[in-house]
Length: 233
Picture (cartoon, one colour):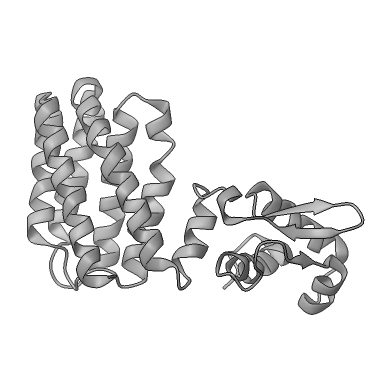
């Protein structure tokens, strides 16, 4: 489905992007824009716009007298939320989920420790509100509602760390949590122990206990990896 407001080039991207990240066009493949424009029944200008977006993600590069060439996976912008979304929709999902969850386990505990030192009163209140929202939606197969509060919770942690690099990972973490839910790499209801850990983490941040906040976050990410062992081996 094309994202509303993205127009014809969005339709092209929603087909071509996942095809590239799924390996249907291996690295080194040359994409002929004229042929693709005909295939997607769009103008050359629309096709060029789609290619520009793919270039910005480092999925392809344009070469004079050659065409549009698919770049090696090692050169892709793997932090781009759209690239993450496409990869999670393909056969590479288990590896991608594990890779991103390992990233979370390296970053989020440190961010939580910093949040305990730097969070404002407003951020502490937001964190508590998010945790309570997770509790309220943790039973009864309300995964979409739970996801909303879960994403917001982790964004607050990253922002409250006071580190702009960590804060920029908010979209990455959001894509991981969203992909895990939408591709059913979740139990029917969230793990009660994980929900409780989020509540305790909100309390640790509010109390300024950096060591406790870091420890609790590490438990959350370890639990997420253990879930992947069961649901996406």
